[in-house]
Length: 283
Image (tube, rainbow, N blue to C red; front, side, top):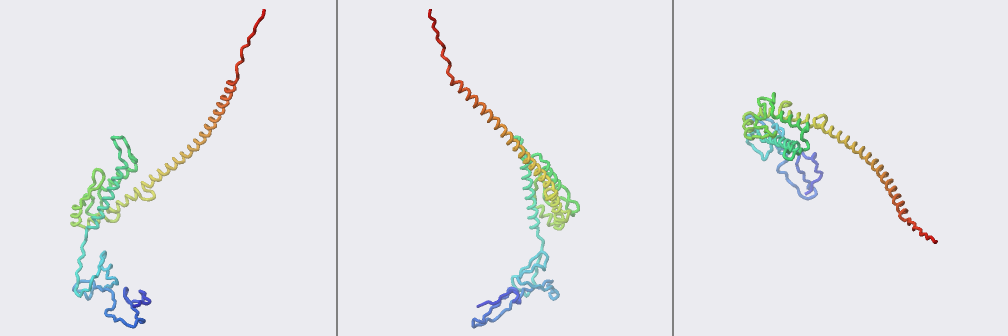
């Protein structure tokens, strides 16, 4: 069985197979012609006026917004599809936000800790920028979000701000509030400019975004100080090199002078004292 010139453009339907048996001495009979999957979308009593859609992959992605339908087998009877909202994605997103924020708070506490027992400071103890991060984040999460609907605080959704700055997520409270009014919850979290997500994103951009954010300016300041410090170190190293050479020459000259003194002392030590003269007088 040979296949010759198989190109998608040669087929009437995507995925259709073409067999060329002209050189094999036998032929094949087509029992079922390839065709796209068809679905009539509409009410059970209005099939004649429904929407006819086709798919070459048995998957329909554009019939229902945000939903994908996959056809497993043909059906001559109407099939009822029930679409309901789910809070799983929302809960997963809130959990991820809480976990990420708590990780940030734990790292910030570690870097700003002061050990009173050992009187040891951490690398960012007393740092103004770290303090600003702490204050601004806490103010946002503990404050009220006006204009984002009937819900105006994270606490109303079961997200509490603890004394150490971390968050606690009470999932059961969140589920109850979501079941009561999912639209209000979604508006509070995702409303453009006024929702938690956009306000959080705006704050993070002001604190840590590229360009003129708080941390960007702080990093540039530290980088400038480091560069100035390196330049100062290079200058002092040059001064030390000059001083070392000067001291080396002075010690060298002192060593020469001491060598001459030792040489002179050797000469003096080599001189023998004169023997006393003995004179006899005869009378």
